[in-house]
Image (cartoon, rainbow, N blue to C red; front, side, top):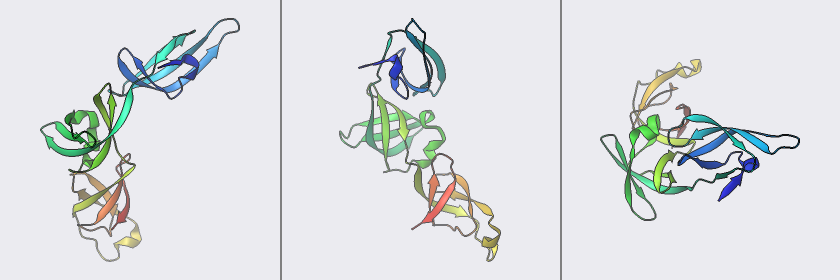
Amino acid sequence: MFYPIAQLQNKIIVVDHEPYLVTKFNFAKQARGTGSAKCTLKNLKTSANIQKTFQGNEKAEAADIKFVRCQYLYKEGSKLNFMNNETYEQFEIDEEMIGDLTYFLIEGTDTDVQFFEEQPISVQFPPKMKLKVIETDPGVRGDTASGGSKPAKMETGLTIQVPFFVKEGDMLLINTETFEYCERVQ
């Protein structure tokens, strides 16, 4: 499948055998000439941005991207092992691909893994995830009125700032984009 250059806004395309998301798009058409599209493209494998201009009747190839529901199994060195929930096939993803989001991986948790040409390129996390507090200072009676915070270590090793009333064993919703406390849950 190919996209005409006038329809590239927010599309995922292939450039030099790599998947790119069109993040910025400016289409211009001259009076008698054909149009051109100046685009900013984000590489879905490396997150690097590039500038590319498409001319005239040029078309861009649509990337074969799909999301597959997978279960996180375990970590071995710098490799994260997952299992496809449909085929039960196991595969590895390098820890660097996910970065700090590895703090949200708990063995047995289901996530959506993004594939390009049958190769995993990223892991999608929900906006908020539930983690258990394993270590924090006890709250002192009367501290809640000041609205301050204290550090708390979560079951995955992530340390965040939480309100004084949070105690060890509490389950918290954590924002996966900002790494901030959202609320205490049961």
